[in-house]
Length: 133
Image 1: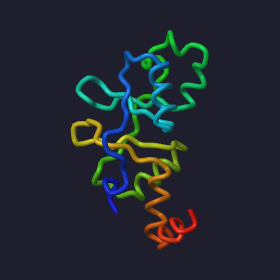
Image 2: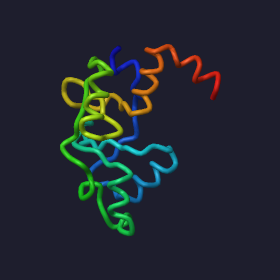
Image 3: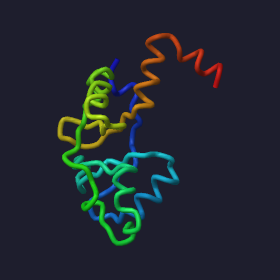
Image 4: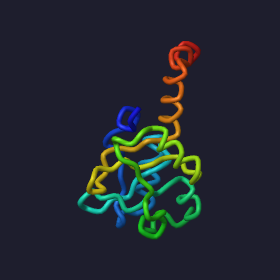
């Protein structure tokens, strides 16, 4: 199964000159923990995570994303297999990967929750999980 089947399209993205406060507010409102950081041409240059924000707590209003982001971004392509994304997440101990096109422009994001949904689909547990939920 390809990453494109499980990724979320058009994720919230931060830019290097954004202030951390704005990113933290968006993450709280959207209830997500990872934000790709993109250049003006939408090329992915890094990620900002809840962990990055915690390390800058108290300085959000005076700190730009460029000072807190993790770079370079570790990415996958939409046509990569979901198992490949899962392996990278496991090896790197990260919770999300930006999904990029051939020019490294953002097209989506895949998270550990997406990988778990794919796993449940493979083992036939998706229907049972929905019935219990």
